Image (cartoon, rainbow, N blue to C red):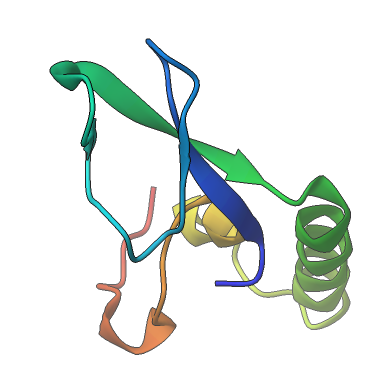
Length: 83
């Protein structure tokens, strides 16, 4: 997940590697929800490339056009969801 820089605690600001913890800060516990911090240059390039490709081949746009903005590791297991 090279499009994610780190996970950052909303309470204390401590930063974690993506694989270091899930959901909450190790120091703050349940009060320290972790925000995903994205590398916006990587996200923008992928997002624009995907949108351009979908437009060129007339692929129906779905919720998954935003996949580059989500902390998803493996697209193989995504359900097909038409919105």
